[in-house]
Length: 182
Image (cartoon, rainbow, N blue to C red):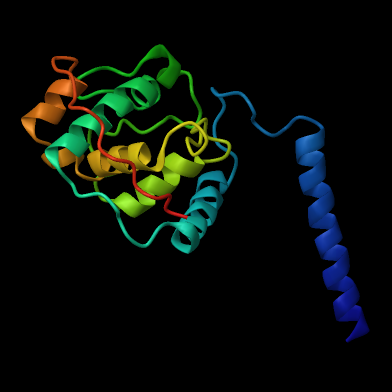
């Protein structure tokens, strides 16, 4: 039994040494143009979803209304569009140069499959090592919920919110702030 335990310990130390060497001598891809490391996306997604499931708010304090969608559209245009794009527009130079590539939230599969609660968590906290900043210290809880509602319902927005995203209209006045979700 002692031999087995010693073998496991030596194997673990060997794996740790190989991983350290991989990073320390510069084999790990770090440029945004380099391919992902083995298992990078899978491990990052696993950790992200486990954390979100544990910490995301359980209730949505705002109603999905036309005024909240329009306010969320204005905020999205100011804070998110440079990376995540706008409906019908090509990605910006900033978005094309990022790794991992930020998802275009209004084309194909965006975040409309996510609940507003999950999207709120991502907006508030950001996602480490992706370029996605957290807005918890710069936006109010109401503003983050407005964007979360907009994105969770991006496939069924009213014309007024679409007009704000297209830069054709001004959104209505902001609604009264809600209490923080945490």
